[in-house]
Image (cartoon, rainbow, N blue to C red; front, side):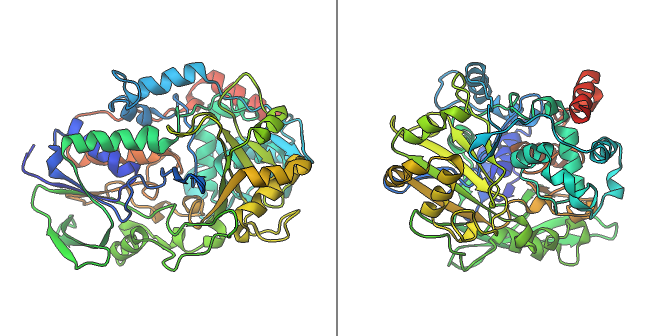
Amino acid sequence: MDTQSKKYLVGGGIASLSAAVYLIQDGKIKGEDIVIFDESKRIGGSLDAQNLSTSEGYVMRGIRMFEEEAYTCSFDLMARIPSLNMPGKNLREEFVDYNSKNKSYSKSRLLKDGEAIDSRPLKLNLKDRLNLIHLFFKRESVLEDMEIQHYFTPQFFTSNFWYEFCTVFAFQPWHGLIEFRRYLMRFVQSFSSIDTLENIESSPYNQYEFLVLPIIDWLIEQGVTFVLNTKVSDIDFVSDEQGNRKVCSIRYSLIGGEPVDVSIRKNDHVFITLGSMVAGSYVGSMKTAPLPTSAGKNFSWDLWRCIAEDRPEFGVPSVFDSHVDKSKWTSFTVTFRDPLFFSLIEKFIHKKVTAYGGVNLIDSNWFMSIVLSYKPYFLNQPDGVNLCWGYGLSTEKVGNIIKKKMSECTGEEILTELVHHLGFEEHLETLLKTSVCIPCVTPYVTSQFLPRKKSDRPLVRPKGSVNFAFLGQYCEMPDDVVFTVEYSIRSAQTAVCSLLVLDKKIPPIYKGLHHAKVLFNAFRTILR
């Protein structure tokens, strides 16, 4: 290995951070020879949970669930990074220790008229049961550009199975059948507990503080350079007569500054994160609705469109970034400074567990779901503060109580709607006085689910690539599922092992269909 080579990583999300770890530990690259560019002032990508201030409360654009059996790359990464809060332990050991003591269980997955309804049976008609089973055995090539709603009957989308499935994974009827099928295949082992989410595992606290901060801390110790608040505007490629292509330069500038060209030498490598599911997000407050930013898309989309022009093997970004009406949602984070809400909601949760599954309001026009955060979800979270995160899948519909689109509502209005659906109206005044609800609109959050062809996403290492690879949610890895931390980490490990020609096996994707007991339990759940 050429110890003089430089490794450049474009993007500061978990994919780039993971790639840096693998470059150092598996590729034996010195930390000081690694440079990570990111447009934000805060590394972490979509894993960016934070406390805005004492008065404004906490905000999370999303939360992540784990399943040790299925997230093999994630746990491989965790095993490499020391815990910041358990001296002598790594992150995987901290994770396992936490989940051995804290079990997830959703007692009331589906709520209607303020009461839990029986989640079983799944209420699938015979045709849709057979359609589900047949889908397991279809080839992806025949599903290209197909929407889920074009495969199932209209009744499928009012079944308990759909309510439970889409509220965990955020699918919409107009999303792509390819991605839906991949999720069925990837999580078939979870079908028998889809109504309780018993197999779901959680990080000991929010993923920014649990996963991102320890990795950043470790990378800084290794001498990795972080270039923040930076726009990478273009990447130049050259090709030879055999069709091999390599990066020859990176053009970037500090936001508001002069452009800088970085020449890529013979033994250098470049890792490029494509697109961003949290691009253009805009946050409101208790009294103000989220207002679209003037920028809209961020630099990661601009860069992908730039390098993909006239290069079809680099994918088709317009498939994913041109349909905001079909890819956005409104999420919200509620900071409760009074125990009232959690005491009221105890009738919907299992008191013996400390990590709660989702509560889904199926009669909500906004199709709201909430997840109660175990304590502490933030390391410095005060004892008297409880947190709840939620989102609406039907963000452009008018609410049942608040006659406005969810995306146009203040935090106070969203909390009011939620309180009415839960049947807590008599406590509304107290809850509004003692709580802070922060709404956030995320335009591209489910864009990776949109109907597509296989060629719309580039391979991690495109054919003919000499010195570059792609990372993140918008590259193509057969069989695995996007919208997961696992996908980003797997892309990083795949890219590093391929470009550096490492003799190392990447942890295999768990395939439940290869296990007779898993298959039996899944089909029994669907058919009964």
